[in-house]
Image 1 (cartoon, helix red, strand yellow):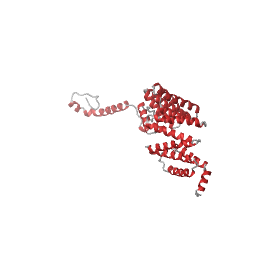
Image 2: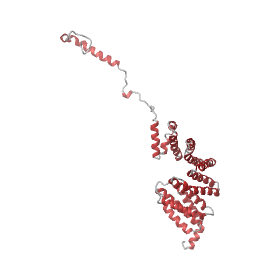
Image 3: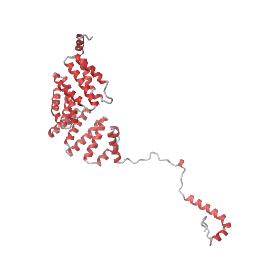
Image 4: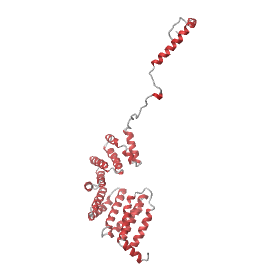
Length: 341
């Protein structure tokens, strides 16, 4: 058989050679016909430049494992906006987790919402987390979450709701002897009382917190809470007639500052101690000493480490400045007597 056209058969090779002069004309035309038939049988295709392009082709959403990695990566980098970009998949993640993991994931999103000032969303998740912790009988953590709810309501200008959550936290803490939660609840309630002008009630709450702070088991938590209580109680006493009682509290705060390992936190505490000392000396009418302390304080402010949050020390500094302004008449008389003008 002719291998070119496959149409003509011969009895042998000799016969095929003898017939080639006659067959070659028809063989070529048949071969071309065969090629044309094969080309026509192929599906029609457009040139690349004329092919329709897919626009905004939908992509498959990332798997839950990928989303969880994204959340954890953003959390570790303190990228709270990055955490919130995964908010739409939060419920999907929670539905695949056991209760302990749900509580941890909720805490990540709560922290993100709170740091980005989305207090309403943070409050809703805090309520969910408090209920979840209660179901797991993790009452210690639940007490701290109730305190967070009190702080969140305070940020939302809801003093009634804030007081209710702090009272719940305090009741739970007293019932189960959770001293950290009790201290935090007393701190929150004292701030609410101060805003109402009820200084005596605020002072009593802070004294109670100071009594139980030594029983807080975790050393870091104890140091943190003690510093807040000492600062706020000293602040209240300096505004009252019992300002001399603030001195031992300021000394305790000074000792805590000296023992603080973190440079930024230590700098903040030192500045706060100087500010409180300025106010104490001014209340005692020792304006020369107060002036020297204030000058030292202003010098310290110029050496604060970068990244230090101003809201952790600036309110105390401004109170020290205003105290000196309030007593400037007596101060100027003291300077004149000492020949300083």
